[in-house]
Image (cartoon, helix red, strand yellow):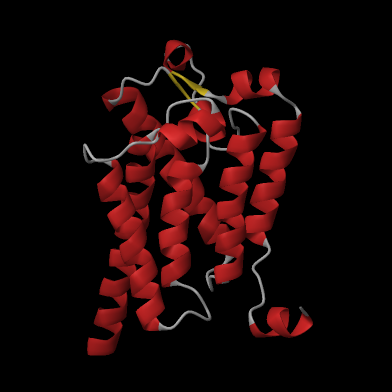
Length: 196
């Protein structure tokens, strides 16, 4: 185990995000309802829900599925400062929430999986130990998953049964697009730097 951690050290910030989600899950239904995205109360000035909805979950199963994703991001060991990841998380949360409120039939929303799709794409791109081929394969796999979820072929019944709610595939799409957009910007900046 020590050799593995020396060869592939982990990033701490995704584990801190996961811990916060665990703590919020432990507070239960009352906290979840106070923090969830709820189209009925956004107009009353509950703007914090655009961000807080992405930190709370339907139940333990839902929280643990998303926490597993944060563990994967930690294992990828992305080489960007934690504050940049937090900024991405906040911006992607707001954009995802805004999309869900304006273009979706979802009345309430909770969960980190939308933003997590973007984090996984960015984590793969900025991983300190994945080679270029594996980075491309991981980003491609996540992108194909997003496309599949938008197709008529997608059936989320097993996950929906596990978490007790409909999977918000539009949240996954928006979070993934946010991640792909940042990767595109980073690639353009990298190319400009090489050309100068």
